[in-house]
Length: 163
Image 1 (tube, rainbow, N blue to C red):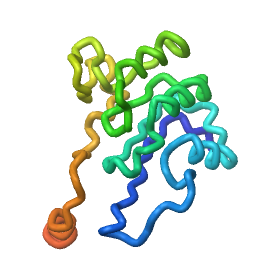
Image 2 (tube, rainbow, N blue to C red):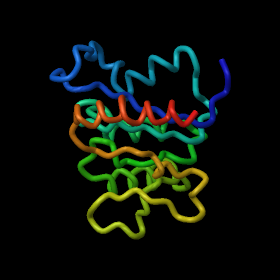
Image 3 (spheres, rainbow, N blue to C red):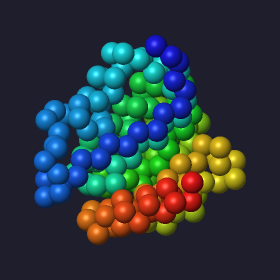
Image 4 (cartoon, one colour):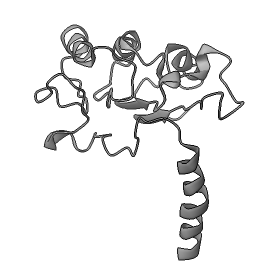
């Protein structure tokens, strides 16, 4: 298996109202079970940068504080853990502080913890721009069938016409 140093993953399961595809096992969600499963095929031992996200709350149920701590402990070379904006965390600042004080004081995050006041924002300092995942075009909103249809017909047709 190839040595992976940077990994970005997002797994989305739409609401059963919009899709009949649904997860059957815990490994179908981003979380410890998912990583235990893929590490059978690639150890990810050299992983330095990791970005995990899920736009829909249903999919983020295992993206929690315990999982963040697991990642920081398991991946010894991890330098950057992306953003917690799309995670299911009640206190992201506490999670960041816990990782930094107990596991890896040098790890970076997209959250600018020096400027945050109560709410979680995703922005990178100048020295973190090479790691920043704040460019991700995700908006944590409800699924909109009209938006999806617009993208499918209007945007895709426009892209084909411009080629």
